Amino acid sequence: MGILNEVSDEESQHGGQEGNVALQKKRASFPSRERHYAVRRKTRSHSPPFHRCNRVPPQLPPAELLCDSDYGDSSEERKTCNSCKCPREAHDVYHEEWVNVRERLGFKPPADPDRRPSREKTISEGFSWVPPGLPSHKIEEYFQQLPPGKVPRLGSPGEKYRDKQLMLQLPKQDLALAYCKHVETQHHPSYEDFINARNEIALDIGYAKDSTSYSSECPQCHQVVGMSELAVVAPKFGDRTLWHPSCFVCSTCEELLVDLTYCVHDDMLYCERHYAEQLKPRCAACDE
Figure 1 (cartoon, rainbow, N blue to C red):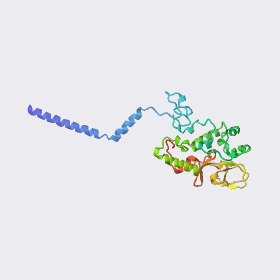
Figure 2: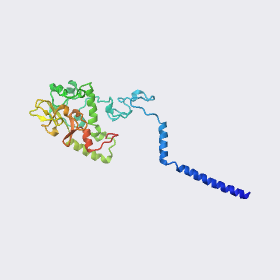
Figure 3: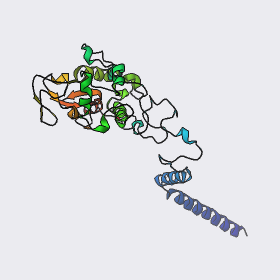
Figure 4: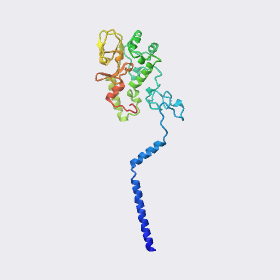
């Protein structure tokens, strides 16, 4: 009996060791990376389904998902829709008040009173913006040279087009550090240096001329701008370089330069957004 007990004890110990070895091998045969992916798949399978931009989850009232609502923060500050994360310029979020681009840029009024923007004059002409430097009887002639959908007539698609371009071409986070949320403290001096150099060297606002005493070749279409034609002048290129109104566009996006606001880089015209991207990388997430 004693011998049998010793044998059975040895077998049980040996069997236990084999079980432990088998158990250890079983755990080791499940790699940690596969386990991680398995947990992620399981988590995703229990997560609520993704709702497309044009669908409203049943637990939320539709008003809370509209992009022109006060869902989270003010429409003036947020860069994206809180519901679908589309850019806010893709939705009906527009400037409710008259926008003076000089004030937006922090520029002083021009010395020439004829080139100073006036809210009263602009609204009385029936537009949200009129080219500075033109008498009233020339404003309609100027806009006839632009595509109809891009003429900023009050209450028209052209007014919304201008609002969209103000946000795209002149993003606030490019204009002042106060509108940046993700620029680290140690990079503040570099940001300010960039702003100061850009404002001094590259950024400016053009104006329109109703007639000139000379003709010039348009840098965009390479056709002649005649002496009797309306023309756009960019002061940083000199007074003798003239553009057709429809040719005063950004070299990158080829959109009309909003309110004739432009930047110069390598003797080419850019909107402020694409000028900045020639020199600095832009975050695709926060747009800074």
